[in-house]
Length: 91
Image (tube, rainbow, N blue to C red; front, top):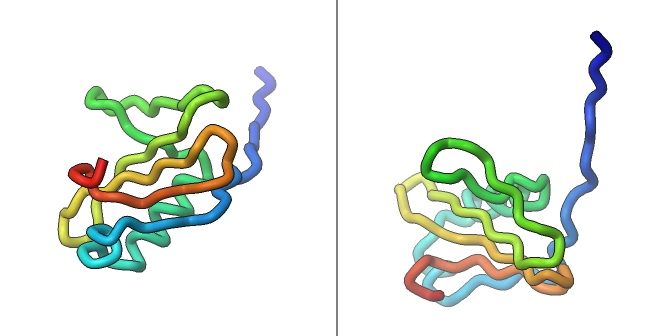
């Protein structure tokens, strides 16, 4: 049986912005790690544990937690021009 590996290029993130709450409350190293995962197409995990990809014509959302357990989202606009890091309550 022949197998092939498929690699994807990093997602375009554009300008990265943090909301005031995210900037004040999150561990910055964890935000950077989340952005790296987000750019590597690690968008999110569904409740059943399966990975879920966003369609290319939609915003891309990934959900993360920092080392203190604080949840945060990373959202990239469909055109790839802007990525926002926010706490769920900022939405």
